[in-house]
Length: 265
Image 1 (cartoon, rainbow, N blue to C red):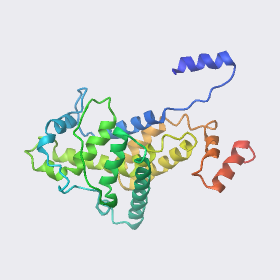
Image 2: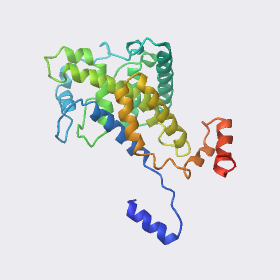
Image 3: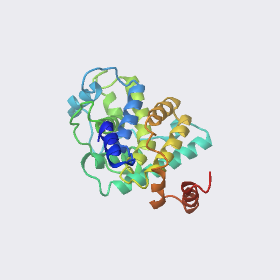
Image 4: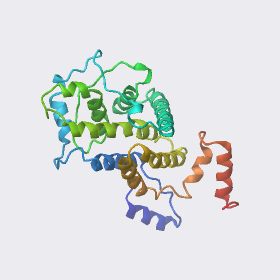
């Protein structure tokens, strides 16, 4: 419903409505913001050029089940024990979220969860790559699906003549994008279905985006900036929904109940 219609309805019934954002749209905004800020490509066309090339030359890229894939390597980011521990926690959380969601998801959503698990190397899964489809910029799922495939098939793409699909700089940026998507974004995105869990997940996402500065200050800043523009719905009217959530701890729920009732500042 548009904002003018919401305001008109509020005036008609004489009371405020509960404003709730379409959280998958918020997720799309965050993802697009990070992708664009990484400047993976500068094309102004309606389609993503690098994905178009990937689709065009997909048949020339070796992608059988016996091919070696370029998977996630935690040690490539930092030798700092605190950062490594943080990355390990993110990885385990993402794997658990993707494993559980893949059981009921279908089509693009299921493929996304499976590709994340493949990149994170969960249980040494067998690879199976669907041929790329639509590459229009409006199809935001393609940013995740095709980017993960291109990073996993990085070595095979390098065997092709230079610039057939990507440049060396593009491939590096794609890996940064995919690492963020699989480590941080996927766990939040797969939990968007629950309204009562939304406030907790959104706050947890915000914390992780700030912490991600230890891995990539650029992506952390970009994603946080995008999320900041969509925190208007994370208000006192929405937070009490968490009281019906099963994922928040009992002490957190007790504090929230006191805060919501006004008995504690």
